[in-house]
Image (tube, rainbow, N blue to C red):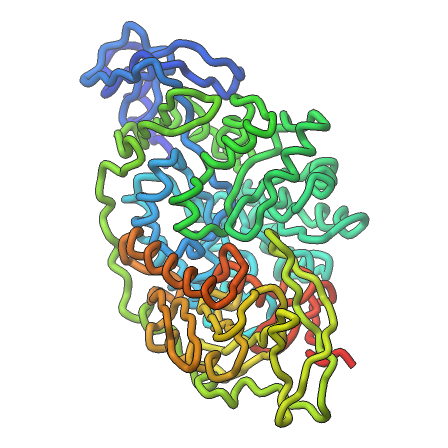
Length: 586
C-alpha cells in the first residue's frame, strides 16, 4: 500500500523521464480536485500510480485515447456495510466499479456480530485481488448492545487494537452515543487506540442535539452519517464534525441535506461527502451508486466540480488517505473515471491502479473468487421459532394496549406509538386494519433460544409474513407477519437455507433468497441475486405491501441504537435510555 524506497525511486525516475511510463491516457479534460479547475491534460501512469496529469512529452509503452472526455478520480463510498449488499465483495465489483466507485470504506460489523474476528478475516480475504479498494472501518461495537441482545461473536478491545494496526484500516467504525455518553471505559479505550495510531473515529450520532451532541463530539468522534435533514447536518458541521451524506435503500437523506446546503451556500464545505451505508443490489443496478448521489447533488444546484470533490478528495482528506487515493495527482493510485460530461456523469471507462477494468457499464475482468471456510456456511442454529406457538403474546381480556414501532418513511428512525389490539384465545393479535403486524426476533446463533416479540406498523401486508436473517446488528432472524403460522414457516425456511430472506402465506413459503455465508451473503452471480430479490419483493407487493425495500426495512427494525424503539431476542428496547421495556403499554 505504501511505496517502499525502491518503488519510490522508480516513480521518481519515470517522472524525470529516465524510464518510460506504462500508460498515457491522452486527450482528456482533467478534473483537478485541488484547484477546482478543469484543464486539458494527459494522464501519465507507472506501476499503477499517477506520475502526472500533465504528461505531454513523456514516452510510454501504451497509449489510450480518452476521446476528449472528462477524467476524474474514482468515487468513494465513505461508510458501507458490504454485508448489506447481499453480495460477496468480489461479485460486488460488477455493480459498483462500472458506476465509477473505486473506494469502499467498509465496516464489516455484520459478519463480526455473527462470527467475531474469524468471520471478519474470512470476509476480507479477497481484498488484495479486488478491482477496487476496500479500506476498513474497524467495528467498534460488537455486540452493539451488550446485555440487550444475543450475537454469535464479538470483538473485544484487543481484537479492535489488532485490526486497527492492519494497513487496510483507516478508522474506528461507528460508535453510538450510549457508549460515549455513558463514559464506558472499553469504548473510550478504543477511541484512544485509534487516535494513538493517527486514525479517526466514525460517529453514529442519531437524534443527539444540544449538550449531548457536544459531549459526543468531545468523545473523539469525527463525523456522523445519521443526519436526516439540513439542520442536523449543520449542527454537526458547526462542531467540526464531518457529515457523510447518506442515500441507501431505506435512508434517503441526500435531498433534504443538499437543498439546505445550497440555500445556505454551505455546500462547498470540505467536510461533506457521500455514503450509502446499506443499499440492496437491485437498487444499485437500477438507480446507481455514488454516481447517483453526485448527479442528484448537481441537479439540486451543487456545481459539478464541487460534487466530484465531495465524492473524492473530501473523503480522502477526512480519512487521511489523500496520499493514496482521491485525486489524479503524482504518486496516487491511478483510479480514473472517464465521462462525456460532468453535468450528468455517466462513467464510460474506469481504470483502477492503471488497469482498464470497466467500460460502458460492464466489468472487463473476472475477479478471483475467495475460498470461504466451511463453517461460515453453517451459522443458523434455531431451537425455537419454528412453531406458531413460539410467537404467542399472552394477555387476558378482549384487548390489550401495546407499544408499536411505527415506521418512518424513507428513514431508518421510527416512532413510538400505542395501539389497542384484540386478544383472541389469550393471545394479542396483529391488526391489518391498523396496518399493525406482529414482530419477532428469533435467536439463531444456537445459544439460548430467546424470542423477543412486539408489534410494528407500516408494512401494509394483508396476509402472510416475511423474515430475514440480516437483522442489524445482532443478525438473529427477524420476522413480521399477520399470523403466527406464516411467521414460523418463514423461520423454518431461513434455517433450511442457512440464512436469507423468506416470505410466506397460508402456511406455504412463496419466495426465498438464500444467503448462506454467515446468513448474510451469497456467492451467486449478481443477476441471480437481483432476480430472486425482485421476485420476493413482487410477492410482498401482491400481498398488500407498500414499502419500496421491505427486506432492507425489516433488517433495521431490530436495531437497538436508532430511536425510538428497537427489538432484539431479549425484548423491546427503549433506544434513548438503552433499556429493556415491556411491549404492554398499560
